[in-house]
Amino acid sequence: MYWNDLGSHLKAVYGTKVYKLSLSSGCTCPNRDGTLGDRGCIFCDGAGAFAAAGDIRRQLAAARERVAVKAGPNARYIAYFQSFTNTYGPVDRLRQLYAAALEPEEVAALSIATRPDCLGPEVLAMLAELREKKPVWVELGLQTIHPASAAYIRRGYALPVFDRAAAELRAIGVTVVVHQILGLPGEDREMMMETARYIGHSGAEGIKFHLLHVLRGTDLAADWQAGRVALPDLEGYISLLEDCVRSIPREMVIHRLTGDGAKRDLLAPLWSGDKKRVLNAIHAAFLRDDVEQGSAFR
Image 1 (spheres, helix red, strand yellow):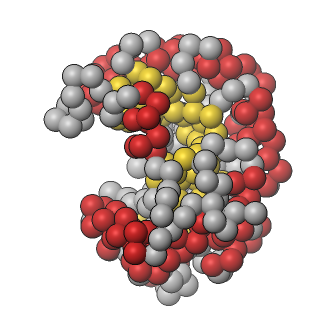
Image 2: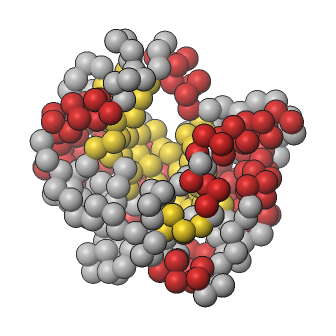
């Protein structure tokens, strides 16, 4: 039984617990500002849309305060820009913002979530500069390799765009982490495993698995309420997850095993709102089923 979880990986690298500090870049998204669309991806609720970034030092201090109870005096941190498309804005402003986030000694790395179609030459040059200071991760929201699913969720770019972005990021020494959603309408088990294997062959070093979940105010919510979207139960999700973990390379770091939305907005599946219970169930099942990461990767 083996899976390469992020927490263990970071502790091996840095010798201590590493915590993510959630920060805001103030970026919007081309799928929301009218460039590609104005409603975002079908599952996106737009929470915090277009929020001002604010002073990065104050953001760092506030984020550290939120984890202060858990973090010891020797903890290290990852400056994590998660919401929306964090390379979608003036490059000079982003360079200053991200350089400031990397400045504190206790910040070990920078993690930037973005879209593969928002990584032009100037952005790549900026990321290469930052990479000279400390490790830089870029998270790419692929979700699926299947065209019908990508069209349904309104992803807004074709698969070769992802391929090119992943290759260009790797070429400048940036760590690539890819998101996959399990449970998209119309996808069976083998299709999800195909996406996992594809990510495994992309050169990405990390992966985040997400459960498709329905949030209030999204277009996905309307489809779910109309009976057009069926969601797996906990055991069904774990079974899918096990097969996808078996379908990725042994050395790939698993950054996330599930995903959930804010409880106040979560419509379904309600079991996903109890994250501790879900993670305990996943770990117990992995042990029970002797899950071996990479055993089905080819």
